[in-house]
Length: 208
Image (cartoon, rainbow, N blue to C red; front, side):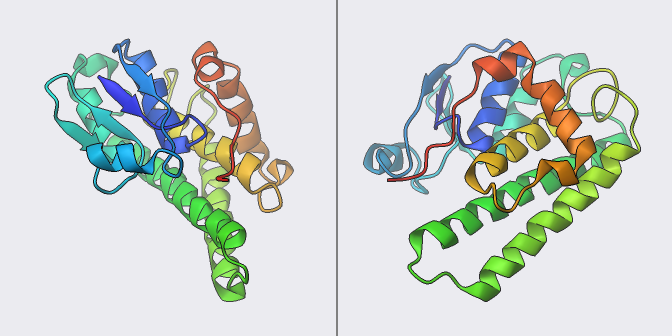
C-alpha cells in the first residue's frame, strides 16, 4: 500500500500510526496538497490527503474510510475500535469530535493565513467550535481513569485526539493553550512519548 500525504497533517498521521500499529507494510509518499497538487490530483481528484493506494490499485480517500478498511484487514481482537455497543458509538463520538475539531482548525488556519482580511465572524465561530470540542473532550477524558481513552489498549480515538492536538498546538498556538485542558495535555504527552508517535512525526510546515 502507498500512503500519500505529509505527517504534519493530523489525518495522514493517524492513518500512518494505525498502519504501523497494525503491522501493515506501506510506502509513504510525503506529497503536499500545494507543492504536489498536480500529481496528487492524478491519484485523487479531490487533491486531498490522506490518500491510500491499495495493492490492487484501488484508491481510498478520507481517513475514516481508510481506517475502516484497515480494520477489516486485521483480526477482530486487534481492531482499535470497540465492537460492541455502547462502547463503539462512544469511541466513534470521541473520534468525530477530534477529527471535526481538526477540520475546523485547518479552516481557521487558512482563513487567517491566506486571506488578506479574515472574516472576524468566521474566525470567532471557528474558534468557538474548537474550544467547545476541546471542553467536551476534556470532560470526557476526566471521567476515564484508564491509561487509554477506552481501556488498557490504544484505540483510534486516542490517536485521533493526540494527532489533532499536536497539529493545533503547532499551527494555532494562539488558540490552543494546553494548560486550560490538563487531562488532554496528559493524554497527549503520554501518547507522543510512544515510539510509534515519535517515529511518525513531522513539525508543522505552513504552506508557502
